[in-house]
Length: 304
Image 1: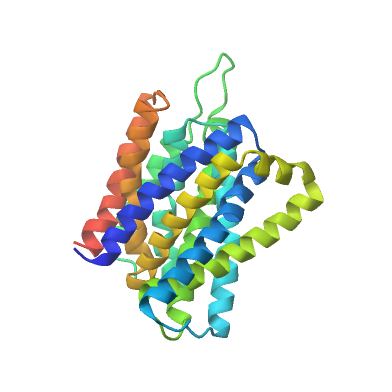
Image 2: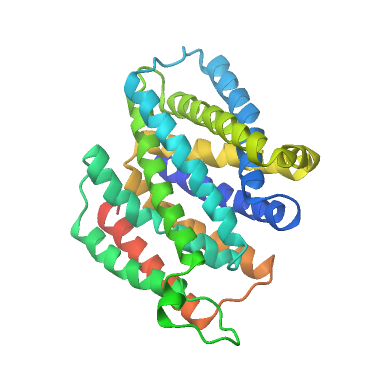
């Protein structure tokens, strides 16, 4: 089995676990930005340690950076940071399974962004997937029923769908930029280039979001440290998942990696049903099925 497939499945599982831990922090202790910063701040030392160990074990020299690398890495880091904040904010509005599935629009968007930025072609299957995915997002964006009747516009264009679609767009930008960053490094194997790009991005995220919290939400940084047990787990799972994603991006087109990454939906439903005891409505299930079908079209058409 190709390494990029193994890395992608592993990354999807770790990302799902990390989302679950971040959700716990968001609903119990931290603000949206505080839970987001916990991921990057506690992941950074783990990433640095992993990079040092790989260099020592393999005897390689660090890869040489280029101007393109810094542009891709910084842009991807900022996009991923904002996307993560959108996901954490979304968890307060919809259940866990629907929240993560709305973010899966990133697969469709990644294919489009990859075409524009890196010149990676989009097939007819991808175009069909976009149409199916649009219908799926409409179904998923429909908020739970309440005693107050809402107009159609409010039922479709709401904060939940906005956070989900924005996170998908930003995750798509970060995926393409991270692939560009790993390809822009000179020297080293795929794992070393992935770890180097990941450490660079994580440092940018920790510093920039840390400065923002110190300015706007100073108390959040202290709360993150107080919740260090869960925050450390968030950082550790984030490091493992991100290293998997970066390794896959170094080996395969971003759209393909994200298409296979839909396996995260399986993990999400297992966590949602058996751990969180959440239920989904008929419309939500229909939307999930359509979205999975749209992603399968990309996977089967481009990878199989």
